[in-house]
Amino acid sequence: MYVPALLVIAAIGALGVRLLLMWRRTTGLPELLLALFFILSGPCGFLLIASAEQPALQAMLPPALLRAIGAFAINAALVVMAVFTWRVFRPDERWAERFVLAIAALLAGVWVWRCLAVGFPEEMRIDANWVLGTTVRALVFAWSGGEAFRYWAAMRRRARLGLADPVVANRFLLWGIWVGAGALVLVVRVLRITVGLDTELRMAIIAGLGLVSGVAIWLTFFPPRAYLRRVAGAAA
Image (cartoon, one colour):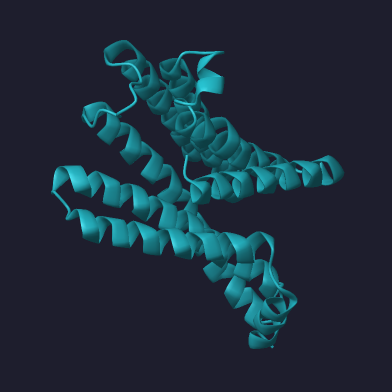
């Protein structure tokens, strides 16, 4: 595994643990859901998939099984993200609850389909299963980003009237940026297959979106004091 990828996974896992510790203090559902999202997607998901060929892990479980577990964890993380979006932004909407159930059913179905059809070989097979799964994951990110932007617009108007905290409003903006960037990364991956997007262009777009997402996550959860002062001052 490349060292940069390992560092990213470690950072995601550390953020999940930090949020889990925060949840122990606050007992808030959003903190718990976010902690589960980062832990499931990072250490439990991408790390298992990326490390499946390591001899130490192969001695315990077959590589295909490790990749299957990792894929299941990533899908579970996306279901958690959908539940977070529902409970935070649309807690009283029945359609949102049904949408989350549909997302969970689709991702579970995609995983079972993959298990029964081709399994999880070292080289991922790009087929209808892959396109459907990636599209559903992109939809989860896009929904969460759209809700965050909608809430940010409302909070910004209230902040201008002194009725809301501009720092809190800014965090919704940052949330929308980083999950929106995640959605676009998945869209680009699908376009690679459906319209034959140029490889160099695709990699450049994904790298740029990854940088935007990383910065937005950093400012969301580890904002420097200077940044907070600037946000608060801009709304004054």
